[in-house]
Every structure is written in structure tokens, then in C-alpha cells.
Amino acid sequence: MADLTTPLHDAHVAFGARIVPFAGYLMPVQYAGVLAEAKAVREGAGMFDVSHMARLWFRGERVLEFLEWITTNDVAALADGRGQYSLLPNATGGVVDDIIVYRVAEGAFRMVVNAANHAKDVAWISSQNRFHVTVTDDTDATVMIAVQGPDATGVLAKGATDGQALREAPTFGIVETDIHGVPCFCMRSGYTGEDGYELVCAAERGIELWNALAAAGVVSCGLGARDLLRVEAGLPLYGHELNDDVNPISAGLGWVVGKEKAFIGCGPINEARTNGTPTKLQGVRLEGKRLPQPGMRVFVDGREVGVITSGVYSPILEAGIAFAFIASDVKLGTPATVEIRGKHEPATIVSKRFWKRAY
Image (cartoon, rainbow, N blue to C red; front, top):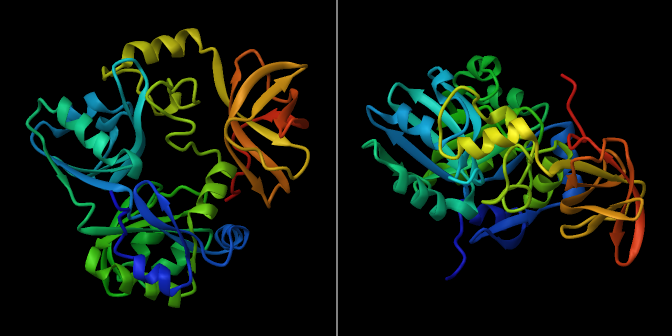
């Protein structure tokens, strides 16, 4: 099957993006360069086309009951206009996908899921829908643009009808307002460790919005910079740190698992919370600038203790950094090595949160 394109594809071509296949779509991997784009986000404001991620509506009298059953986090704790990071678990305690759930109003919720899992998630959700909930997929009818960075909210507010609401919304808050004349559903969330919003608007207005944001000084960024930024910020990627066989406790995501509710797979997940797991997702920081890559092995005192799941070169830390599932008996701060092309490069086991913005 041919790769799809998002409604913003022509804008990416016009802006000189390098286009690559990703999750069934042709997506921009970079414009000016990965490091320059990552710097733009860390120091100002950058934007990413994330329209490939799927957007679903859930409506019905029993929608809250349904979402409580199929997700790990406490959906019942959400007020109108608020969202939360969560997981779709399976019956064995693995992860079908990591998601964001937003309560728009009573009986109406939105969910954002990963592009590579779009069809899989919809099928899974449908198979569990015994609550007569109406699930609507509006991915093709909309675009989603992530505007991220310390200046992101300020830049958006200047072009918004209700800029004050954008400035005052909490993390995972929802604001519905026009931005540069385009009606947007604005979610204060992202995947970079920075402040900012993910904007959803009608597909036919997407390029208009992208061009207006560019004219306002927001830097166009590709998937390469997004991957670098999310690793620095300690954020997992499905298919690397999460999959159908990974227990969220092992991945360090116990904080998005409700302790007082019943949900699919809660038994195995609660058991892991109580008794621990053989491995834990940790950070690995190399002493040099070598690039760690998925599949590379991690050693402590000659013993293999883990395997790299994601790796990047961090310009902030001036070092190669990575995620790896490490044997649970290995403590943070332990010297280690990463086998790169037959050579053992010195490294240290560290927190997977390599970088955090001090607000």
C-alpha cells in the first residue's frame, strides 16, 4: 500500500523538508537540520506536523465507564476541559498503546493515539465496546500541529482570539479559540519536554495555519528533532520502550496507572507494582559523542544487563544518550559500557529523565 500524506504535505515540500516514510505516512524528518531544529524548540518555538497521529471522539451515556475500563489512568478524576496521559492495556498487562484522553464535556471525550497503532487501536477499542459508546474517527478530517518551546504559548497567544485563556490553561488543559483566524481545538501538551500546545483544526485550513505560524516566527521542525527532544525529556516511544509485552511498571509508568480502579489487565500490572519487575527502563549516558542505537547491548563488569531501545546524540549534554531496559538490581550511577561496533564505550546508568526545563 502506498504511503499516505497529511494535509500539510505541500507546505513541507514548499519549506524544503526532507521527506521520509514513517508509520505509513510520508513525513518531514528535517528542514534546516535536526540539531538546529532541536535548538529552536529548546530556545524559542518550533512546530511539528503530528497529523499522522489518530484523533478519536467518544460519546455516550456510559462513555466514562467505558474509558475507565479500557485505560489505566483515572479518567473519572478529569473535569471538563482537562486531559491526561494514559495507556490502553491488554489482558496480560502489556501496552496496546500510550495515549492522551481529554474530557471535553460530560459524555464527550477525545483520544489521541499513535499513528502506527491507528487501525490496531480502533479494532481493540471496538472489541471492548460493550457500553454502547459511539466512537468517531476524525483523523482524516483534521490536522494536528504541535507548537513547542519556552516561547510557544506566548507566540500562540499573540495570534489568538483568546490569548489569555491559552496563557492561563494548565498542563493538559483545553482551549477552543481562533489562532490567526483559524478555529482550533488547543491542547496544552506535547512530546518535547517543553511547554506548548497541540492544535487541531479542519484539514482544509491546515496549510493556512502552518504558514501563519511560520510567519509569526515559529520554526518548522521534523521528526528527527522530535525524537531527540523526547529522549532528552525521558519520554517513551511505542514500538521502542512500549509494546504489547511490556508491563508499564517496568517502563516506569506506574504514575499513570490508577490504584483504586478495575481495568483490563489490572491484575498483572498491580502484581508487578507490588513485587517488582526483572528489568526497569533506565537512562544510559555515554562519556563520549558516539551514537547509541536500538539493539546495542549494555554491560556492567562484563555482565550483559540490558539492551538499548532508543538512542540519540544530545547537543545539550554533548553526549550520546539512550533508554534501555536494565536489570533491576543495577543501581543508578553504576558505571557501564555500551557495545558499539565491537568496542565497549564507557557509560553510566542514569535517570531516564536526562533534561528538564526549570520553570
